[in-house]
Each structure stands twice: as structure tokens, then as C-alpha cells.
Length: 167
Image 1 (tube, helix red, strand yellow):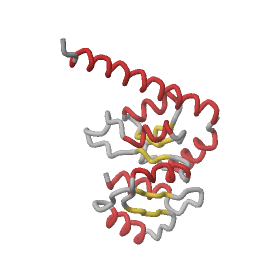
Image 2 (cartoon, helix red, strand yellow):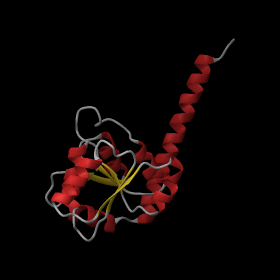
Image 3 (tube, one colour):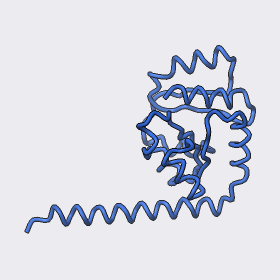
Image 4 (cartoon, one colour):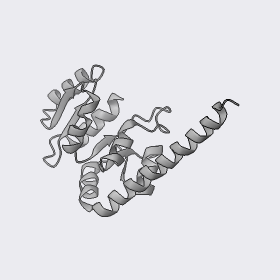
């Protein structure tokens, strides 16, 4: 949702330690974000618009941390977004909403930071978190999650084949 984006922009806006880059179909939020950053004179937010999925590799190579925070609206707290999987595949830490399923997994598996979007010290917490990452451990944690996901997919395929098998 737009509110969570504006809160993150407000927390990190004009902080020289950060740049915020938004990729994707921004039709619904671009006007509000543009007005917000203009009104607050924020100059470290960049809107890039739609992209081809094959460009994900290029984006990943230029990304330090993934913004994976969604509006707590009762529908997204248990969702698993594509960005979560991109984070573990490309070894990118991610920011997730405190109390969400992705946030819980990020905290337990040590692959991201659980964020309270209203925290006045959010910028410092993100910066400190990023600079405290032990990268070998982080990459190992991502590999373990990816292996668990692959096992779940194999189990699911076997069950579906068993159900669909014609005798």
C-alpha cells in the first residue's frame, strides 16, 4: 500500500546513507509518491516504472537490500511475495513488516530485518542491521531456505502425480 511506502520514504528520505529505488508498475502510487517527495523536498527516491522480469538480474546486482514491507491490511500478513524468493535466490537481505509471516521467517532464519515502520529510529536500525551481517552465515541461511523450498516442491509434485496417475 501507499501508506507504508510513504512511511518508509519519510524514515529514509534525504538520509545520505540510503537511496530508495522503486521498480514495477507504479501507476497507482507514482503520483502520490512524486507529490510526497516534492512536498518534503526529498532527493534520494527514484521511480523507474515497469520492467521486464528478465531485468531482475540486473536490478539484483545493483541492490543492497530489498524493501519487502506491505501494508498490514489483514490480507498480506501471511503472504509470501516474489521479492522474498528473489532475496534468498540473489542473497539480498530484506526488510519485512514486524508481525508478518515473511518478517517471522526473516528473523528466525536470519535473512532480513523485522521492521516497525513507525519506529523513529528505523533508518539507524536498517543501517546497523546491514552493517552487522555476517555474509557467509547469511548466504548459508539463504541456501538452507532454498533447499527447504525445493524439498516442499518435490513433495507436492509427488502428491499431485499420485492423485493424477491414471490406472
